[in-house]
Amino acid sequence: MSPQCYYCEHIFDSKNKLYEHLKVHSVTKKKQEKKNKRKNKEKLEKRNLIEAGLSPLSEDKILEQFKETKSGEPSRISSRPRTKL
Image (cartoon, rainbow, N blue to C red; front, side, top):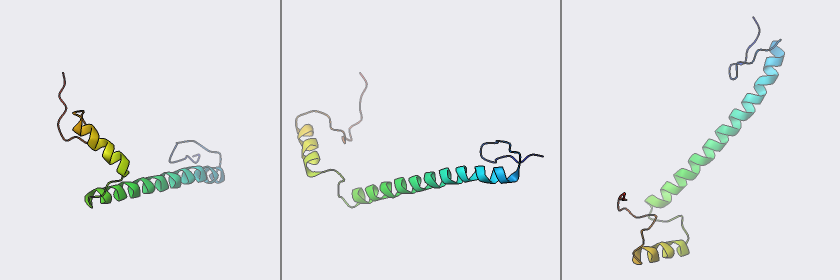
């Protein structure tokens, strides 16, 4: 029975070749885990800002959104449900 990669089901001639091949998957997996960890951290930080009443937007952006709501145009952060025409 020939050694087979668990991840991509590639068949190899020897276990040594399989072990060398598995390094590719472990590097890719580590990169993906690192990326996911960073994304989760950013989401958590954003959520904490919002829960604390702080905004991740600059003061200029907040004022711009406020002016848009005052001019009668819908805002991106509007809580009103959109209606289809």
